[in-house]
Length: 387
Image (cartoon, rainbow, N blue to C red; front, side):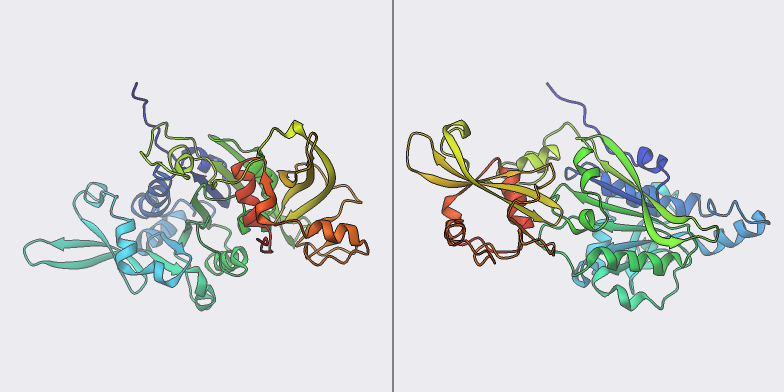
C-alpha cells in the first residue's frame, strides 16, 4: 500500500513566535526547503515591512523597507561550505521563475551576497538584479563583527547537528553572530535546521535543551524561555523564547539500507551497531556500579557476573535519574566531591581493588543496552576506551 507522503511546513513552528527556532528530523522531508523559501526568499518579495508596525509613520517606513529589501543570512559552519557553486546548488530546488512571475530565473552568489538574477539564453550571460541575502561561515564569525546587517531579519543555520565535528565554542559563536546582526533591534529570528544525527550536540547542552529534547516526540513542538542574564529597565530578567520541533516523519522510505537506514528513512536518531549482552540481563548479577556524566548525558556502568558461570563484563545503560551522592562518577564536570573523577584508567582513589577493577573497562569487555545508547556514550565521553 502506498502511503501519502507528508511534506514539512514551517507554519506551526512560526506560530510559536520564538526568536530562536530549531527544526530537526529525517533527511529530505522538506525542512530546508521550507525555511529558505518561507523565511528567506518570500519575505523579501512579499513581506519586507512586517516588522514596522510600531513606527509612528508606517507609510514612510514601508517605502524604505521596500526600497532596501528585507534580507536574510545563510550560515554554514566552514569557509569551504560557502563556495558560490555550493550555495547556488542549495537554492536550485526553488522555482524562482514562478515565484517572481518570470522576472528572475535563478539565484547567484557573488562576494558572499545572494542575488536574484536573470540568465539570458541568447547571450549566455547572467545579470545580478536584486540582492536578497548574505552567506557567511561561522568559523570566521569575528570577521563580521564590525559589519552592518540592519537589513537582515532572518538567520538560517543549516546542518547545526554535525556528522563530523563542531567548532570550538560553536553555540556562542552563533549567538555572537546573532548579536552582530540584530544590534539590539529585537527583530531578528533565527532558524537552526538539521537531520537527526546525534543528541550529543553542543547547542542542546549549552542552551539547556536536554530535557526539552528528550520529551519532544516526532511531530511535536515544545518551547522554552531562556534567560539572557540581563535585566531590563524595569528590573525584570530579559528572556528569549526558543521553540524546538522534531519534524513529523514523511511516512515514505528514502530507499536507503545499512546501519543508518532508520535515521534516513524514519527520522530516528542515528546510531551504529554496538555489542549487546550475549545472554539475557536477568542471567547476570551486579557486582559493582559506576556512573558517567558527560555533555549533559548520564549513563550507568554495571560490572556484571554470570549467575551460573564465571564470565564477567561491563554493561552500559542510560541513566535518567539523579546520580547518587556516593556513586563513583566519571565526568567532564569539575566537582570537589571525591566521588567525581576525570580519568577512569588513573582514578584518584585509594582503593587498589577498585583501581584494578576499572582496568577491565576495555572495548572487548563492554556491552550496551541498545545501539543508540552505545553510540551516544562513545560520542559523549572525553576519553578513549582502551582495547
